[in-house]
Length: 195
Image 1 (spheres, rainbow, N blue to C red):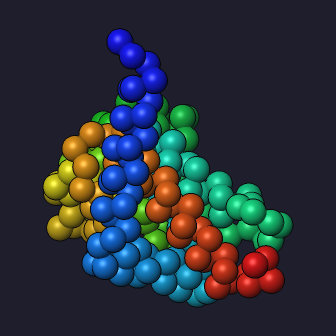
Image 2: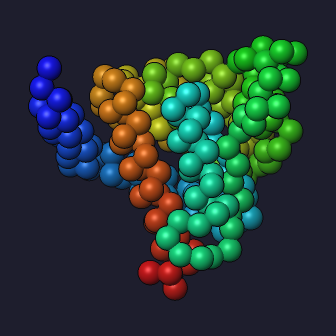
């Protein structure tokens, strides 16, 4: 196996997907709407929640900590939380089932006017679907960073952003770029002095 060829091919594949995504006006419009939804949520005093499984859970945590910590420069923290801390996850999955780990926490913490970001490369994660149903019942807006065909979540969330790739790694590579871009756009609006 030629390791250098693998590296080069993977970079080229990722670049082609990123170019395809960024050249699609509909995708860029949805990303702009995502930014506006977050800005409106924070301006009105709402909080943002995020959830996902595996690598998507890591991205959900990354998304939240960029708001509560810092992105590029110091500024006040914004209300954001990735659902699914370990004690909650083991408690709820033991008592109610794994499909309820996000919905139970959101039911306890979420309020009308908040926003839920769902990450799922398949769009069919049962625990994320349950979180969206809980969000809908509480008047919480929902955004889905999805992949492949968008799965069931594509038709459940208020704003689906579907990355047209077949493998989770490529989908998540675009998701993390979207996360960084949306954080920057929120900061540019709420903290223009940082730019």
